[in-house]
Every structure is written in C-alpha cells, then in structure tokens.
Image (cartoon, rainbow, N blue to C red; front, side, top):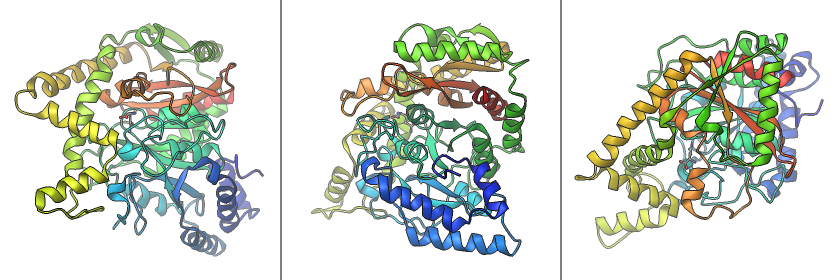
Length: 480
Ligand code: GLN
C-alpha cells in the first residue's frame, strides 16, 4: 500500500490485518516530511520522539487486544492554533512563539481517545487571518502540486500536509473559508461543520461567533470518521450544540455504496454564478453539475440576495471580534514581552513587535467599528445584515437539500499575486457567507483546470446539522 495516498479507513484495515504497525506508519510519515517538507514548509515543528512513543504505545495496545479504536495509532496533523498539551501553539505569530499549551483542545482530547496521534504543528496565516499562508510570521508553505503557488489559507499547512502525503488527515479551522479554500487549492476534502458541532475549547479564538474546527482528508468517509471522533457537546464551550451527533462515516459509506444522488435537490444560487470565476474553474464546475444530474441529483435555482454584502459584513464582525479576542496578548501573561519604560510602553513594544501587519490591520479595523460613535453605523448594522444573510440561507434550503457552488473564484494563485489586502479578502467571496449563516459546508475535489493543471473544487453548502447528507453526497460524487 502507498501510505502517502492511503485513507484512514485503508490504513485502519492494514493495521487490523497486522500488515502495518503504527510505528511503521508514523516513521513513513516522518520520512516523507524529512524528505520533502524542506521544500513545502507545511510544518512549523514536529516532535518525532513524542510521535514515535505514541505509535509504540498504540502497537502495544493493539497487540494485547486493547486497541482504542480501529484508528488507534494513526497520525493526524494539527493546525498551529489548536492546543496540544505540552507542545507549542504559536498561531504562526511571533507574539505566541514560545507559548506551550497547558492542555489539549477538546477536539485533540477526543482524537486521542480513539488513539489518533497528534502529528506536528501545521503552518497557517498568523491568527488564521489570511487566504494564502503568506501571513505566517515564520515561513511560506508551498502548494505541493505546484510549488510556485500558494496552498491557500489560513489552514494552508493542513491542506498541504494531506496533499503532500505527510499525514493521512489533518485538523484546521474555518472562520471565513480557511478549511474549504485551502482544501480546494490542494485537491483534498475539507469540511466546515455547523457552528457548535465541534467544541472550540482549546482553539485560539479569532472571531468567536464564526470559528469552527474541521477535518482535511483524502475522501468523504475519512471526513466522516474524523468528524465522528471530534464532534459533540462539550461543557467547556458554551456555544457547543447539545444535539446527539455522529453517524457521519456511515453516511459517507452509504453514499459510496450506492453512488447515487437520487432524491437529492441541489440549489444553484444565482449570485454565485454571475461571473467572477475563471474560465477553467467554470468549466470544471459545469462538468460537476452535469455529473450530479447524471447520478440522479435534481438541480434547482435558488437565490441569496444579500450575499453581495457578505465580505463587508464579515470584515466588520470578524475584525470586531478579533480586536477583543487579541486584546489578551499584551506581553503580561503570554508569549513575547518587550520591556518598555512604563506599562503602556511595554504594551506598545510587545504588541508592536509581536503582531504582523495583517493582524494589526484587523485590530485597528475592529477597534474602529466598535468605538463609540461608529458602533451603530458599522457593527450593529453588520449584525442586522448578518441576520438577513442567514435568512437567505434558510429560504434557499426550503427549496433544496444543499447548494452547489464554486469554492473559490480561481485556482491556487502565485506567491505575491494578491499583495493588495482587498484583493486577498475578495478571494473568500464564496466561502464567507456560510460562516455568517452558521451552517455546514464542504469542499469536494471536482477536477483539474486545463490551463494550469491545478485542482478545482465544488462546494456543497448545507443547512445546520446537515453534515451527514453532505458527506453522503460527497461520497457518491467522488466515487463517480
Ligand atoms: N481568509 C479569511 C480571513 O482572512 C478567512 C480566514 C479563516 O477562515 N480563518 O479572515
């Protein structure tokens, strides 16, 4: 078997059959990282000793008939804003460069319960602000399919890790598209679960009302396997959903078994198809729509009239929340501290040196829209428009089971191509509304752009709690 392309369920079968040990699997992943990550730059750090010790323990459990699950001993890459006890968690920022996590994020704790092994700290845009990984304070991550291009962002390290064959799956976070867009750019599956589905405890907050942790995988079943592992109520996150969750891998298996989309209605929001996407991607998307029809799916037209405000609303709400969340990084309790002549000077020097330009831009914007005299005009109004965007989604889902849209306006772009921040912000045009609406979505590899040879994804957007249906459809589509 080729470990660099194997899925979680294939690896689980090999482990179970005794054809592969966890130590062999993890060593093979570490070797792949040693060989190629110098060029790709997906990892900020990887603690080999910890990984191999965990792998050895997993092998011992399995040998004595005490495997924690079918997946005991499989490595999972972790984005560097998700806490792993005893390891550093920098959010790719100088201000947290030396912070060590005192506890596991709930998602990580739940992975460990099944025996999954946290595998390295994956690069990202600083504090998850960006769409290309170019905002990391430490390094560039390159797209494994074309190293002159970005892997997307902010979870670019996670996408690159799975695409480059370094680990079979990874966790990322999605505030405005940070799982779906890099998954699309690197040709892997990436899901943003419904807000509240996965606990945010231990995820360093960017915009708390939008952030969600989710999986990067090589197929739909794996996405279900990871979501099954990490989802569910957590008393440590007051926004965590009380609903019983699970059955996601089974839903994907059912989709793969039938290969049929019969009885499913796919809405095409007309605002997402009114230009603004490059010709090569449009061609792949057209073919994907035809394929959905040929598998028995029904296509209907829907409309999201307030979608045109999504970028503006997002960059008010997300920056407002970020300015509040990042206020705690002041050189007193965490990370970098640069001593000044007095307290205020210490704040200025620590924050001035610790944060990169994009993060400073967001803090300034966010502080501005929350300030007295501007609050009503910007923040309050943005909240009202957010409600309209959410209602648009609810209305659209009255007419369809899920929406089928582009994931990004273009394929992975080249380094430096979007030097103007607004250009960068606009690249999230197809992903951002979903976070504002709070429901779930998935980027599904759909084909290759004939001009660049780069992957193109379709995006499926579902109502709240519809992950099972999305995974069923994704599995059926990918089988075909
Ligand atoms: N690219 C968007 C931003 O810069 C979304 C990032 C994310 O989802 N974390 O804010």
